[in-house]
Length: 425
Image (cartoon, rainbow, N blue to C red; front, side, top):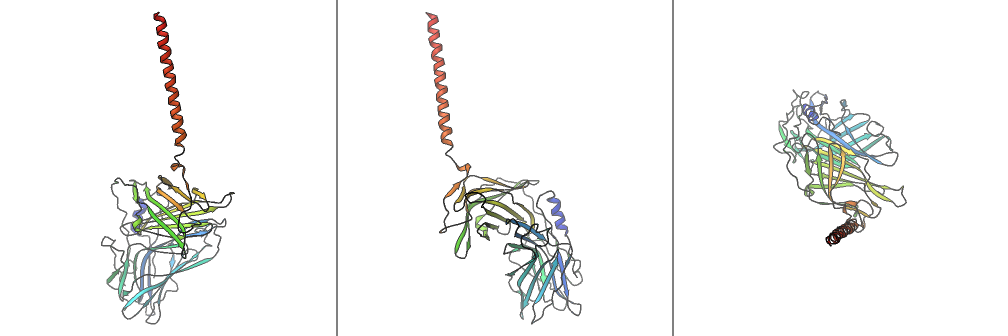
C-alpha cells in the first residue's frame, strides 16, 4: 500500500511563510512492499524534490522544480533476496519516475544506484522545452552499509547533483530486506543528523498505513547586526582545465515578519556547476543550508560578444532538520556584463533582487565564467560604483566654483570699502 500525504509540519510552514514568493510544498510518501505471502518485505517513507535546469527553444536555460504529486504509484518495486537486489520504484506526475536499488550480504545492506527519469513533455513543469520526451539520470548512492534489520533514518537534507539535476531528500525512514514482516526497532542514523533533529515514529506492520513525518518550523531569532561576509574563492573545471573563476562575498537578506541577514561562509561552501560555450552555471552549497545558483550567458547579438549574469536561484534549508523551506529565482537579470574573454569586477556592495522577500548582496566581486586562461582572471571591466575617475572633474569643478565665489565676495567687499571712503571725503 502507498499513502502520500501532506504532513502537518508543512502546513505549519506554509502558514509561517504565507505570501512568500517561491515557497513550495512537497508530499511525504510511504511505500509498503509485500511479498507473495502478503508480508512486508520493504518499507520506506521519505520526502524529495528535484531542481532541474533545461534548455528552451530559444537556446536559453531555465530552472524549474519538480515535486511529488498527491497521486504516486510504486509499480515495479521488488522485495529482493540473497541473490536479487531489492528495488524501490515510484511513478508520479506526467511520466516522471524515481527508483533506488539495494543489495545485501550476510550482515549489511546498502543502496547502490538511484535512477531518476523526468519527462519534458510535461509542459506545466517544462514550458517551451527544446528536448522532448523522457530524460534518465543514474547516480551512485554514497550510503554506507547498514546492519540488516536496522531502519535507516535521515532527517537532514541529502542532495545529489548530476547532469543539470539536483535531487533533494529529507525525513527519510527506510528498510529493505525486512525480516519476517517486522520493521526493525533499531535505527541507523545518517552522519548529518543531530540530537536536535525531528523525532521519528518508528513504523510497524500494525501502524505502517498511519505513520507520519513532521517538520519543525524554522526557528525565529532576534535580528542582530551582521558584519560583511567573508570573501570566498570558487572555480570550476572541465577535465584539468579551469573554465570558471569567481571571487565574492555573499549575504542573503530575507524580508519576512522579521528581517534576517545570512552570511555565506566560504569555509563550508562547496562549488559545483557546468561550463559551456554560451552558458555557464556556478552552484554554491553552503553546508546543506543554502543553495545558490548563478547562471551566465553569452550575448551574441552585439558587435562585440559579451557575457552577463542572466539568472540567480536560491534555495533555503531549515538548519535544524535540513528540510527545504524557501525557493526563489529571478531569470531576468542583465548584470555583471563584460566583453567575452575579460572578467567583471565590482569591489563595492551590489544587490540582486530575487523577489520582494529575498535579496542577495555581493561584496568584492570578481568573476569570469568563460575563456579562462592559465587559471587566472583576465583584464577586468570594473563596475561604475568602483570608478573613481569621475571624482577628478567633480573635485576640479568644485575647486573652480569655490575660487569664483571667493573672487566675487572679495570684489564686493572691495567695492563697498572704496564707496564708503569716497562718501567720507
